[in-house]
Amino acid sequence: MPLHLVTGAGSGIGAAVTRKLLGRGDGLVLLARDSARAEQLAEEFPGAATLVGDLAVPSKLGDALTQQQVPARIDSVLHIAGVVDLGRVAMTSVDVWERTMAVNLIGPAELTRLVLPQIRAAHGQVVFVNSGAGLRTSPDWGAYAASKHGLKALADALRTEERDHGVRVTSVYPGRTDTPMQQRVFQQEGREYDTTGLIDPESVATTILAALDLPRDAQVTDLQVRPGTANG
Image 1 (cartoon, rainbow, N blue to C red):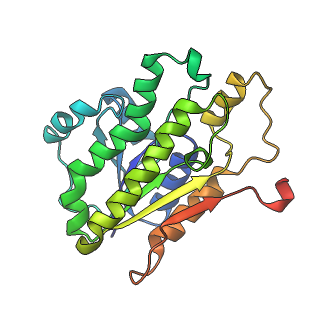
Image 2 (cartoon, rainbow, N blue to C red):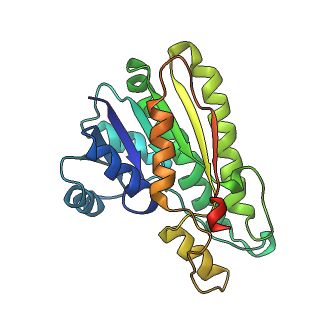
């Protein structure tokens, strides 16, 4: 039975992926930012194990994991957690920059480093759920897009470095998806929330599982997910 370590399992794409993996009987370890959140995730996803570690404080992840039981073998790490705060560069505080980079880039890099021996042992896979903003950017998206461009660079470097260890690395770039994060984006943009033209998180989850399930003689390196023609 494959075992997956998932971040961001509490909502949106992460929750959809977690439900699908649990439904087919895969093993799951869900990363929670604190013990209270871990209890919530354990209640929401019976059968899944949890680890506590805050991506917003990457320097403490190592100490946190050494005090917990980390599996000896991990078949995939699914980096799905993320934060977004819109704003012009001229108005974006250093606190926003630091939190955005920590959760969206440095935290995933450190978590990957910490569990890389377990991923190598499984000849496993690392999946980074990126964003369309990881390929292009627009006004007000500077901090978020910078973190996601960095995440692409991290994935590309890791893929080359870990090829000889049999580790696959995939970046997934969803378009705007119907998630609580997207609700926050609409609010920051001063718009009423409207799901028209948004992707269902279940559809993004399906593409992630397709990348995981690809036979070992191939890998999906970069996967863009865009709204279907029926959604405009």
